[in-house]
Each structure stands twice: as C-alpha cells, then as structure tokens.
Length: 459
Image 1 (tube, one colour):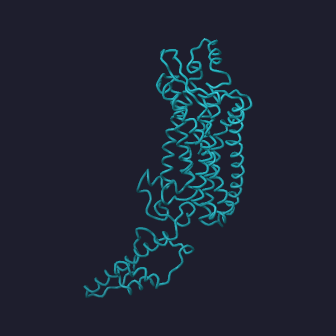
Image 2 (cartoon, rainbow, N blue to C red):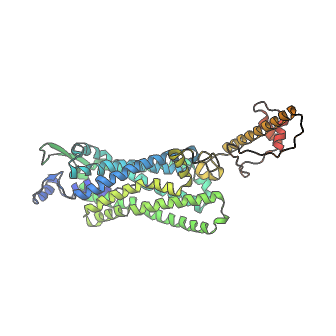
C-alpha cells in the first residue's frame, strides 16, 4: 500500500554520505588500491545490488504499475464511489509514484555496475534527477503511511461504531483528509530539497567528466542528522503510525471475530462491511511486514551509525513489493472488485445483467457503491414499466388471435419469460406506492391508456 523508503540510508545516499568529507573518503578507499566511482569502490556489492534492485525490483515495479493502474480504473467506477474507495484510490496513486521513484533511484542505476549498460543514465541523468526525486519519494512515502492509517481509522468507525459511520465516513471528509495529509507531508519534507548536490569527477576508466550525487553540508551535520533524519523520521514514519495501526486493527479483529460467531444474525450489508474490513486488515498486515526491514535499517543508523548495504537493498525491494501487491489482495478478498475486473479485462460474457452484475448497483452495498435513493427508485420504475409493456403486448396478441379464429380454444396457462434485467425491490428504502401514484407515473409514458395501466398495476 505504501512504500516506506529507508530515506535515511538509501543505497546511493548511504554509500556516498558519511560524516567525513569527500577527500577523507577518497583517501580511505585509495588505500585499498581499488578504482572509485562516485567515492565508491568499483564492483563492491554489485552482484547483490544487480539481483535485488536491477532485476527483482524492476520486475516487481513493472507489475505493480499495471496493478495500481487497474485498481484506480476499477475503484473509479460509478458503482464503486464511496469514501473508503476514494482513500484507496489515493493510496494507489501514492504507490504508483513510489514505484516510479524506486525504479529511477534504485532499479535503473543498479544495472550499470554489473553490465556496463546505462552509463549515461548512471552518471548524467541520475545525478540531476535525484535532487528532485528524493524529496518527491519522501513526500509520497509520508502520504502513503498516513493514508494507510486513515483507511484503518475509517474501517474502525464503520465496524466498531456503525451508528456514527453515516455521519463520519463521508466522501467529503475523505477528500479533506487526503488534502490535509498531502499539505502536511509537503511542509514536513521541504528540507529534503537542500540535502543533495551534484559533484563532478573524472571517470577512472573512460577518462571523461561524470557527475555524482552527494550530500550537502546540511545533511552531514551531526545535529541535523540526529534530530531530523534519525529521531523525527523514526517517530513520525514508524512509531506513531505503527502504534495506531496496531491498536485499531486489534479492535477491528475482535469485532470481526465476534461478527463471525453471529454470522447468521447479520444483514447482507453488515456482512459486506465485515468482508471489507477483513480485506483491509490483510492490506495493513502486509504493510507492516514489508516495512520491518526498513525499520531495522533506521534503527541501525540511529543507534549504531553503521548500515549493512545488503539490508538497505533488501529493504528497498520489500517496500517496492508492498506497493505492488495491493491489487492481488483486492482481487482475492474483494468480491465486487473481482467481478468488475473480470468484466472489464477478462471476458464480457461471464456475467449476466443480474443483481450480482458489476453494472447493477444495489442498495445493500451503499457504503461501497453509494447509490442514492433517487437512482434506486428510477431503476425499479424502469423494471416495472418494462414488465407492464410486456404484459400488454401479450394481451393484445391473445385478443387478435381470438378474433381471427372461429374455433373455441381451451385457455392456456400464462408463461412469463425472463425479463432482460430482473427487478430488485428494497422496501426499506423505496416505500410502496399506491395504485393511483403508479398510474400517474406510467400514464404519461408512450401515450398508454390509463385504464390499461391501472389494470396492469393492480395485477
């Protein structure tokens, strides 16, 4: 759902950024008699970086991009309009941004050290992009973390306090929450724009000028690193959201277990709420599991100031996986999501136009689909009009056949054929109309005779 970069210790930043100066690092590495590229010994950890970032991260990221695009298309459908789905669309957008920044920051540069491919990107494009992609990644990271928390809070209210859900879990509140999270995230990460700079050096092999991304003096400052990069990052990106996520999901889990014991007494709407809560509970669990390694990376840098590079690279891969698997979770646990996905992308002949069709919104899915009472009454009215016209056409055919025939025929029982779209009634949401109200509604359509319409309605 959200990709939490170990921004304190990303592969390229940690390997290049130390508490000392560039000259000290250079003299240190020259004692090993190894050629350097951007103050990093050539070939050091290149194979693991190529496997984790150059291959796996790029493949997973490509799959995640397609999955998030499909998720946004499905969740944006009119029958899926709701507050929770608006938040999920925001999470899919953040995941898309995080996957793209992950590929450009980690995936593509990891290909060169092992294959000597993408030399121009590594030394000319990447140093210019990193100054802007790095702050963008941290902004999207924070938005993604707190959108995950917002989704969990919304499900907590809907499942544990259902009487308050109608007033609190609204589409307008969801939009306001997304806007506030984005604004706060941008303000918090403004200093990131001044943490990176570009330096120039001569390439050891090709003897041409190349560019490298290095840390500014502000980033290597001890006080800045200790307060802003280490402790504030740990508190606002891990401690607060993870604590709240754990508590809210424990409460949701207790309510789900209680509801499963009383499953026969639950309404269809309540069952859907429990199913949606279960799906989002799985999303949060995957989120926490995939961010354990980045959390360990942050702890290593905060307390030990020594980060194993393999831990950073695996952490980058895990958070990319986390941003790419939500589509799979939606398909497995989201029944309506799966139906619409199959309808749009797999086959148009799998479903009929019935109650379970993705194109037929129902009122018992109001929290997920948000169908209004007016739309529901219009749907019922169209079904009744179609059924009435079918009956009238059958009666006219019977009268004509009797007028032309001189032999007396025995009456045959009426056989009603299935209508193209079955009519679904909701007594609680659509109160019964009197025959006079139905006659006024139907008499003005197609110039039908009032007596015939009244006879049809009373039947």
